[in-house]
Length: 103
Image (cartoon, rainbow, N blue to C red):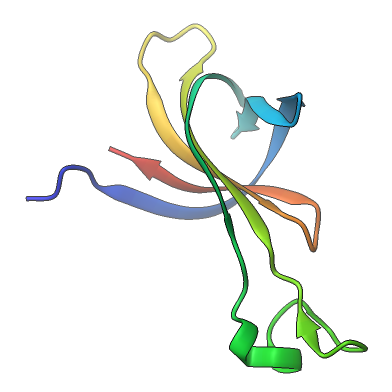
């Protein structure tokens, strides 16, 4: 049996940052405070797709799908339970999404 399970999402969220680190986010009308950053990494798009990939810059022929990923512990306002979630900032669109909730 796996050590954890992840539910995958692609939900747009609002994120508050301090010194470029997420400190809180809004999801489904509820505010979550980030208690700890567990991991931070970068992901790039499918470079092999070239100009045909989603989000591609047609003039340069290069896909610009770089994403900044954050795995954080967060607590909803007024609750004591902690959730581990993955947040994603897409540099090409400037949008934040919640990509996973880990159990």
